[in-house]
Length: 416
Ligand code: 7TS
Image 1 (cartoon, rainbow, N blue to C red):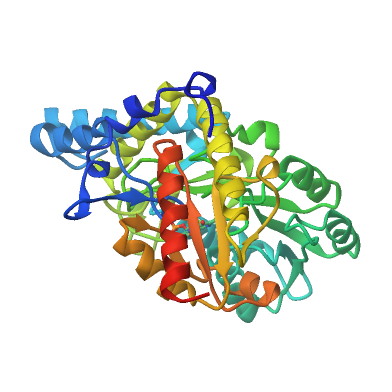
Image 2 (tube, rainbow, N blue to C red):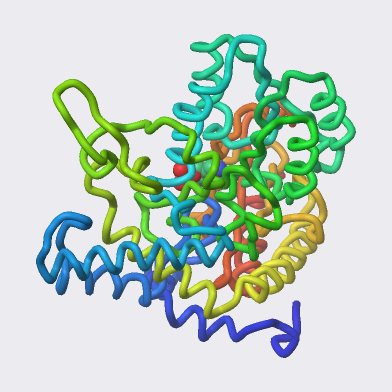
């Protein structure tokens, strides 16, 4: 176990900020929340910001010329600036509020994709993607006759970059759509290199940042991503809010997606003109409280420091992988800890992951079981399902020990 003095922060001080963590799932059984890749818990700093909005200045934004609306608008637009800074976008006009990663990618498919892709064009992605970076492209492909190609993996669960280069070199690739960090294998993809190669081949690069933004510093300009998508609820923020970052020149050329209030500049009965960025892509009343809460989440992560969070999680994941490797008949998927994010996905002899998750739940340990919205990856790995423990800034080394003990109990119960 790591020496506390070597860790980048006092995890107990962090845990004190998260009210939900201090509970027992049944009498005498403390909650051990290891399902962070699905959704993270929220610190009181975010919860209080949501509460304050509804108690003190709830009103619609960009509309009313009255005190509450002005205050709500200032907080909503202030949150946009915080998110711009978090990812180092060049302008706040490049930050579009969406419902999350899924909506962000669908927005690109339905606007840029529909306007720019035609029969014969290729979208190059990978077999490790979450469904939200596969299905929107499949829907577009069915409509437009474009082709989707999937980059395979190396034995260790990293992306096969030779195959990627080869597939890119075959031509006709207009878009490369790749996840930054895998929600199953934890693989950290070399997205800056991927974007550079995509651009050399005349393609754009979209990065799914759902699992990177919560856990590491990200600079979209350094990566040179054309689009970068992520969700608030995985980064200590509320549900129902996320971001699509897009390069300004590109967003300017894209048609809007949803039509309605706020996204227009002028509406006449015979046609309409569009609002400026980013409002062109924010039709209707947005998720105001959630956006403001997301701004507070960015403040929280910055205050702890994303580099420190990444270092802490790396130590914790190394420890978890080491302990998991001691459990007989347990197989962990993905690269070693130094090349991966804070997830440990595994199968355990013949125990079905759902049964295993149920047994762990009895011990207070929350993990996810199933395909984790990555069915093609599970097919590729030749398994139907897996169990996944995913860690975040507030998890402790002793929680890893609880997981391991619970696995030994399951082993005994299933007589394996
Ligand atoms: N992309 C990745 C890499 C993800 O991990 C997820 C959610 C999404 C996209 C979709 O995000 P949403 O907020 O729009 O739903 N991943 C998971 C998971 O691994 N378990 O539950 C949700």
